[in-house]
Amino acid sequence: MNTRIYYKEGRSCGQPIVSSVIDEANFDLLMRCPKPQSSFELAPDGESGFRDHFRHIQIDAGYRDYSASEGSFHLPPALIFCDDNDALFPSLFYFVARIDGRLEVCVGRGGGSAKWFQIGDSFEAVTDNEVISRMENSIEGILAFLKNYKEPEKPEKRKITGRELKRGDVVQLINLLTGEAGEAGGKPPKQSLFSKIRSSVAPPKGSRNGDLADAVVKMAASPTDYFDSNEAALNDYQIFDPSGNMYLLYLAGVLEERHVVATVDWKDGLDEVLFALKSICDVAEVDIDRKKFARKSTERIFSLLSEVIETKMDKTLFILDTDSDSYTFGLIEKGKMEELAACGKRAGIEIHKI
Image (cartoon, rainbow, N blue to C red; front, side, top):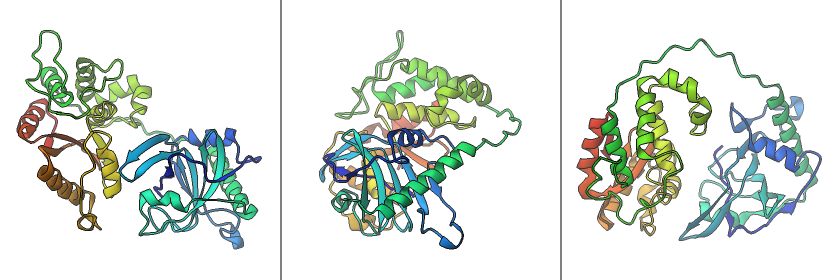
């Protein structure tokens, strides 16, 4: 289950609710849901099956506004419930969302042909006490699971073999990607790779290119030791275990914060890819023929999208290989792709055109 809730213009459309179970305290607790997961599939209850609770529950702790040619949308934190997880937006689903400073309960209708920007039109208030009771029972089941959940004992760590990266090459690569000047005594890039793209976004505190390169080099050289010393900070980037590709995931995470790259899952569709693209690029929405993208893999979507972008503008898409099941991608001037790939090769970080 990977559903998002899109409110049009952030307007409230549900039934306000506060009960002994559906309240701010429990909602906040679930929004901070620890591992192991944020999606749950509950077991049937004896002969009654799923009559008293929902089978699928998803926790979406996101909170963001999103503007597109289809309109302005608000994605609130939400608990989403359904019995049949039959589409990205299930044919029938219910949710509790925090919007306008309160909790409200709604029903939504999707299905295989549902468009993300139309889903908010289906939202209606829920007043059926039986539905609300099923929500409460589902929440109580998750809370009981989390209360009794214990992290499995971790096996003895095997020290991961690292690799040596040259700091100067890594700094140069980051300078090229971000379009920022080099460190004192170093040469700045001749020209920003990002023309009219968000290269002017100020980097977060403590993530100056040299500092970022230091972290990447140390992480690559000794993944296990670096993780043990910096676990809390790495958790913020969804890195929960040491690995040989940890430095690549961290680099991608910091560049994402700077709106230089974006990341999507290997099974995401066109809407998710376009949503991510708009987080790094101030270009108008690319006019595409959606029929050509129907039923295509994420890899094929990127290939087709790259063709469209290259036809309509002086840009191309590139992939920063993180050796994972996600795609981290960015947008650069066509004439700079070879320079970027060569710089990545010197730094030991694979970057290639889609």
